[in-house]
Image (cartoon, rainbow, N blue to C red; front, top):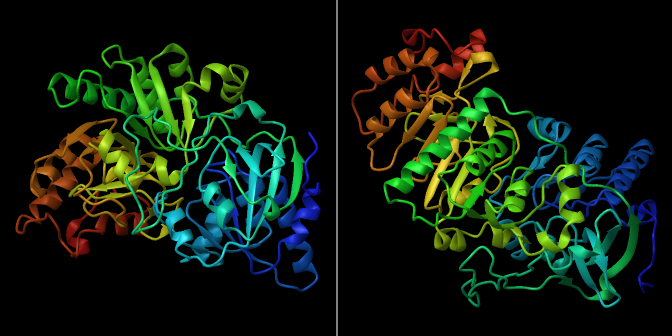
Length: 499
């Protein structure tokens, strides 16, 4: 089909993007992210820097991206600011040294923040598409993210038309953008499979200044092999949910699931799929990972609403080779809808996310190491945790070969407060914090979730904090972190040393 838009090379497209501009890129994780144009922008930045001229752009996406976007731009020192989430090692270093300004925010809020103008104008939308029509109809590829908002608001649009993603993805997207207050109405999703929007993004064709043809697979990798620790965490989650069903706190038909990203999340979903006592379930989540695909094929998962297909190449091939089946089983939505608090609360989501550390009050740090070094960002975990019917956080009880305890007296950074965190699960066991006062929560977390190497010293901390509603000492709360920074190991702490 002949298109009325200029056909450009990635290098020609990159020349159009100027220093100081803000670019909204499609994608949510490496899935659905443009690859050729951002890599070419990075090369342009290198040339400009070598010529002694400044070149940096503001970068907004759906979430993290791949090596050709965050990786290439970071290595070229081509970013002035970045939001809302990232996972690239080079970019992370630049953020932590202050070279790149990073705004960490809840993913459900990002499109609204952009619409309200809090991040300034969006000069360019650069999106990856599986298909495009002469009239400006864009079929996104393997993620939606915030692409629909960027396409509507941007001054100009560049499209990567990627032959690696079949045009038959048409029908797997559900594009819906709510109105802003005071005109906003309810979002009419009452089941994960409800469709409320359009299968395509429709834009003014006059804004499309170029199309770049590519044939590039998503830069998603596989997952690490499960370990005894991740397997046990997954089994503990499954056993807990079975117990909730038997107690009548989860209905016999079960509740929709949300799961975070990574090896632990993948292991948890795998364990749920294998459990004979858990019925077939639906998902209402932000990311689909590999473990969900065989569960959709087998009927263990009956439907999955998501924002992104974050699949290994092998799992993605399964989807595209049986697209008629998966088009009836998967729906991709904008992150503003996949993560929307109204829908999460209405559907009664069981939310399952991972923590860096959990303190004895039940507060969770999911973003910063030792309180100040950014890892990736809060992502969508807060969107779901605050509004879920059941909010679960899981993590291994230790890190760095046992030198760091994930259970600490006081979280060095707090992303999710004790008011939102209901269940804590490690390979050691489960702490159900519902209906417990702070001192009861602390005892449960130590007894059920802390590693045996740390239980005695955590109990000693509790003896030192008997008075007050919270088991808190301002002088000792971060002593285990200080112990690690001084001695390289949180164990064998002398509490008196830190008074």
